[in-house]
Length: 243
Image: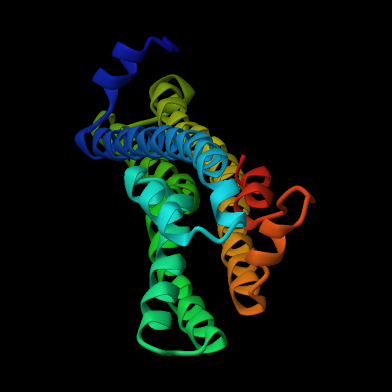
């Protein structure tokens, strides 16, 4: 049996070709999602470290306005947007006359909502990987079933059958199942890898928000600014998790 790709394509019926096209489109879509998510995670981690370096000292000193200004200069960076959301709400509610504790509570709620938005952004396209990983083997199996049906059609048309008659057709049909597995297996592995990376990234952001709210509630910025100890603030601690 000739395993040449052009020969295999030419010997397939239209239904099996349709299955191969579907699998190919799934594979291309998964590659696009993986590349996009990897670039996003790499760039976001690098930008988060840059933001923490620029804003960390001012945040530890309690200079909220300066931190918000730096965050606005770094639009599109997850950590910057996250910290800006919490500080902006805190300053606005404090200016309205709310107590520090109440303003920090409202800032925490705003961070929860912002975190949900960021999570949706980070997980964009992951459903493509999940769907492909779970359906590609079955799509390939469908192609094999259609190919075997085509083999039996050959037997019927020739009035007889034997391995010489249907062997090539069945072999070509089984290749489609192999193609489906070849698409599904790396997709599942990449989905698990990216899910872990994204979960770690989200945990880092959540940790930053939690530490920020704790410090706002405790009013610890002034104590940090007045001491000689190095600032142990949310952004510096969190960039380790985001990297």
